[in-house]
Image: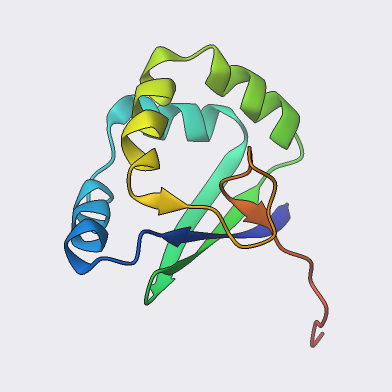
Amino acid sequence: MHKFLLILDLVDEETSIRQYEDYHKQIPAEIDQSIRASGITQMEIYRYANRLVMEIIADETFSFEAKSKADEENEAVQAWETLMNQFQQRIPGSKPTEKWVLTKRIFSLN
């Protein structure tokens, strides 16, 4: 199993943030299926103010490249991403095409 933490900022407006959270109370079945089909076994999103942290637990078959390619070919995922894009903004310093930014672990207490 692999664990990844990614970050993203939401548009800093309370009504918009509430809408974003409402959409995530129950995501569409097609989105759930695409996530699970990629090898992701668990996913959680946490929020502080307008900053989001996503934790992904994935099996050995998962790769970001394969997930991205499958997402590009999935109309439901593309529609979901277009919808979510109105609520999201890029992390300062990220690439123009990056939404969720992969973090780097700098400490682990084992």
